[in-house]
Length: 290
Image (tube, rainbow, N blue to C red; front, side, top):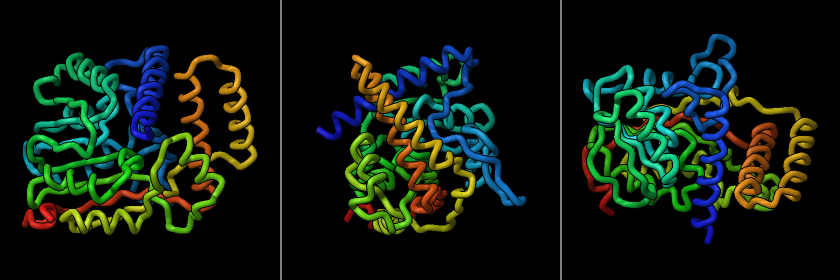
């Protein structure tokens, strides 16, 4: 039931965001990002540029890519990262999403940009076997919904070449969020979460999957959150709209935004971290076969 409701949420939100993008008159390959918009880094510290697209270029410069790399994007959405990288980097790029709507639109964007020969998109669950082996696996705000982080990362490891790498940019709990936390309860309910993954759970799952962590970059200061009073007002408006709209798809979209407010509150209270973790796949396949 949880997985089915999560898939419905993905589809409803994807259709809404695509409609909003079309109404904005976006050009092919632009405004495809589905992850959060960031503030510019402060104090001269390195980090992604402001907005939603900055993380794509920053991540490409942060990881070590071989010549003509093979890259897989776990949770590719509309293909924003894959297409942005492929326009500037030779190689083979594959994107995965559980949303058939997202995959259709990603393929359309690749065709419009003339990149369909090097960019492929597959509709599949992240825990299903992934065809092929890749130099680099990336995930931007996509493993948040994984019910079993170790299983998901072990599956990704099986598709990563020994000596290859994984780069994660994810929302991670700092480990102090109690099970009865009101914001966690809202987030769990409307985003259909099984659990909220912590920084430590990512570390353990990477190690258990055969990855060696080589870098952790904290981008939390770039997460843009509203003031508490502003979040309260937005939540009241969204809940009111959800009560009066007769369309289930719109209710799911409004619920997703309410979940986003709960996540903002957790950040505002210092309970969440926005981290980039880069890990190298061990040369032996032993860890992923256990």
